Image (cartoon, rainbow, N blue to C red):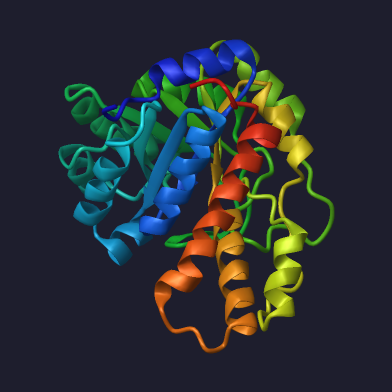
Length: 307
């Protein structure tokens, strides 16, 4: 099945009260694990590529891996650019076969964010490509994205931003955070703010970035086998499930996949120090990714059986 854009995915998700998972990919095993999880759960998928992933794997490699994965799949799948920093990179991904791009002007002044988003929207829409934008800012560090503090999305500004730019979906800041070290205290999401935004912009698809839950069993496994990821905490899954029933149609997950894969590899090397064939430790790592994604689809996103 060829790549699709998120339009029909999000329309159904909004109507039925679930979210589609947007999972970051960096290599073949991660792509395979996500695709196998989606097939097992009969779920729609968004596979997204950060600027850092493009530097690591190369855009052409990732696109060709996606083409290979789709040969054996009948799932609806979106290939999405995550946190595109400027028009030029968004253009490169649009021209390279991506069906959705994010232009992240959240670090810019409001008018400058509008200007760059409008430029990307104009280019993308002429080519049938979906555009996600961001208003507000979430703290934390992930790949090339970093912010020291959260700036919550203003609902009235969000409406004006969408109307003036024509962007197709909007990433909002209501309390999530990038990376593994999200919170020192209890995590909280600003649901009244989310409710206000959905009332002002009914049926409009919203996006949550920085939405890994940092499962403690994987943190503990990493540390047990030589890791040093103490104090890592994420977004409780029940809060994400609530958001998925409240107008959030896309939830981004990256850190949890990294943790599952790394914990599996560390465990394998500790138990099998004689191994040096990458296939022997990447195969269980791929299964760990698959298991993590299946759990998210069933228990957090609510999109199992929605393909």
